[in-house]
Image (tube, rainbow, N blue to C red; front, side, top):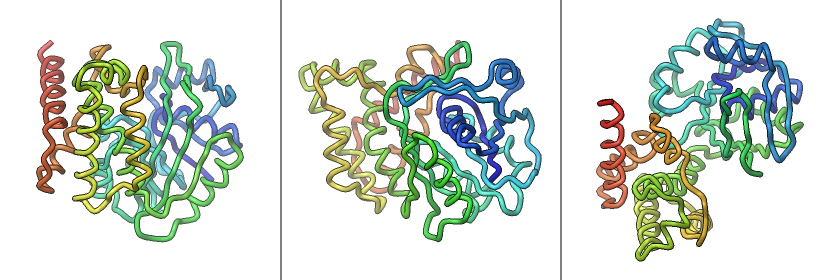
Length: 306
């Protein structure tokens, strides 16, 4: 099985590195600086589930080489450039597996490559790339789910599941990957909206008067949006999200808040703005999400003005 991994940051570097560790001939499509770093030091992962150092294949430009699978692990604001970068690698039998948050990327990928060759994928991991080029896995969670939308899973996905079964990663085939994406959004949407709006982690928000109520209101808005879209999350999913969003003393915050704190670009449009647009389309009131979206747009405008 031949896999092309776009990017060797937190998500792509971690899951791609595990595949290489399992003996899969994965090649990383990266920028020249990262390519030189990987050639010099190898791909290094630090993880509580076991670290690794491997020397994967590296490319700075994609070519059609009969790839079975292209693993797309970019940020949403880089999606257009990412599609251009991998387009030469998409052959007649190549499957694209995106690992982005939200759902807007699925429409863009379908339009570019055709829905029949785009799988749905959802990644649960907290990982970052250090200044030295090390992928740092920050907690014990490293789950990956993937599957085709409304059809049988092709051989490439079965082989991917089998390969990941030889690694510590918790991976499974999903019969309804779109629902899985909505389920993740049920937590990520309110987490990103609230922690960015308040510029604080969960514990500090819920310690404030009215803070827990704000978190529950934001969660309720996302649940209503998902329900209006025909993807109501199960009670257990909502209950688990509610516990996470109101846990006293929690230092949990969206990675988007860390992006803001360092003055970087964010996935605001993809994670929060798209929810607000879907709320309007579904006739759902979303005042907390709306306020967060205004706040995030103002932040991005400030970045552009610098």
